[in-house]
Length: 437
Image 1: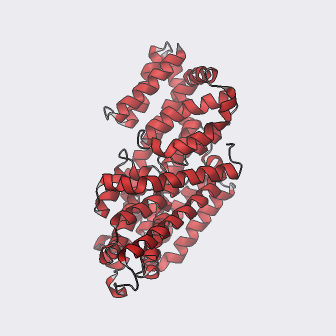
Image 2: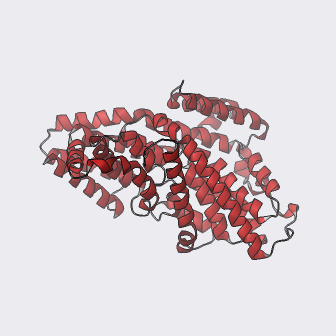
């Protein structure tokens, strides 16, 4: 009976989120609590389940909030401006360099973990070159999407945070083993971007460039007066050094990620904006996006807490495990890695990571498959490489709107490139022994 209530909880959550009857935050909070009460648990027990889930997820939420503030403050200070200008100068007028530069620039800008920010920065910076050379804007959208998709696996990105939260695994423990896989994926992306550029050269009959360097336009000329007022170009090296120190400390494992980003945010504010009112303005500028995701993650903590502590998840997993041949269980991570990207077209990140993944992971665990492998397989595609073509993410519409192309055209052109990146990373994970085939 508990397993049935668990299944109903997941189905109802999926239904109301996917049909937009409720916001993800409201669904993740209200539905599991109501279902637990209907299953016969008293309000005191349900309260204990929910609070326990929130406590488990609190460090992840703190890391995410301060990661957004940290990278947002440094972006406001202009840390990325010289990098963008340099990329624009290096790519010149050769299509293969331009497409490769687009992918490289997207992977750098996506350090903040936001697809919307990546598209807002990279597409307007590169699109004039594509138009002047009469290059296909779908190539720009595809190159940027591939780079942003692979980099969305970063530990402060939405999918990895959700996977760590729903499976209650430390985020760096989940991410660090897949770092070589992510780098392999980036190498594949850069290769594809370069080949797309070579294809454009052939289509255009490219011999020599037709765009003069003074026509390309640089980041400085595109800034508004408000953006110029908060830029700190003289602190570029200091800010880059701060990023290296923060990320290095986090990856070393000697300091918890939340502490790294908290201290990094404080230092970034003190270095770039000395006056309290300036610091408040920078925090206010990024508070909305930070709090929206924090709310979702707190709600997810309640959902996973109720599902786990009530025994619903365990009973569901036990039922699934008894109906799956034990000899096939070891293939679970490999199979999930292969299909995770297309699942982005069906499930939004909250539905998948808080509804589907915990059940699959628990069922695999019952059959001897480590839970962490299931999470690692999921982030190889589900709303990582899959998010830039999914109609379930607003960033996809921003991408096609900025590039001036139709969503269907973008999906038709880019889908298999993104899926190929996911497959390459899955194979790489097998080859390095991350999980068995």
